[in-house]
Image 1 (cartoon, rainbow, N blue to C red):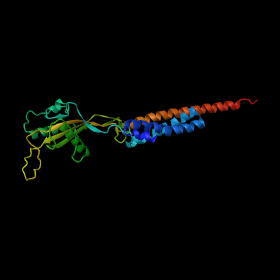
Image 2 (image 1 turned 90 degrees about the vertical axis):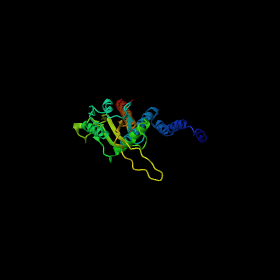
Image 3 (image 1 turned 45 degrees about the horizontal axis):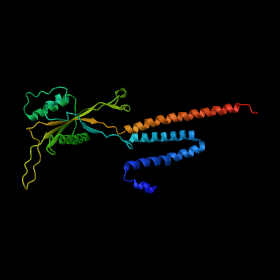
Image 4 (image 1 turned 90 degrees about the horizontal axis):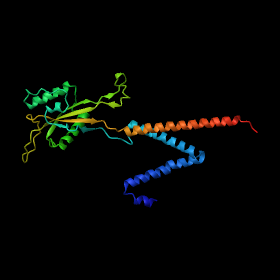
Length: 275
């Protein structure tokens, strides 16, 4: 048997299938065999299956609480199709990022355009993230990847100047309290806009260290529009827990119902006349 397993060790899928089969026969099969020889095949099967479902419910509950075990997709920023990289401030309204069109007709200096855009985000209640917040660096890293994929800017040729976000609120809330949000399983869409400003092209001279990069005041900022996918890390564990709990309760009810029938039959048998 060991030689056969070593011969297929190079095939991970086949090895995994055999591992599951052997584990099922060795562990669950042995428990069912012991129960079947003591209390009968049908009752032993119900007891073994009920115990397995209860154990899976406990295991799934621990996975669900701590986010371990069988996990789903992790949270990540994803592209908004066709509107990820916005290279003109006026396109923020056309792309649906801002609800109101920016008044840019009388503004000619790129630095002033950037200020108008900043005020537009703030007026529509977008949150401005500070550079010290973890979400700032995470969003900036994802935006850098999207800019490189779209060939909008070269790596190291821009600076992330602002990060705006809106949405993401969980609902429903009990009495509107943030402290009582244990049943707030749903979330509003969580959007993030990363503003990047191009650097002035550096001129390197042999034998001298390159100068520190500076933001080019003659170029407008560009914007990366992203949607925060909250992922489904605990979804598989939740499905295992809920499904196993339902199976466990159903089997426990069947065992309880059988015990009642047995007790009634024994009581009826005791009342029968002897002889």
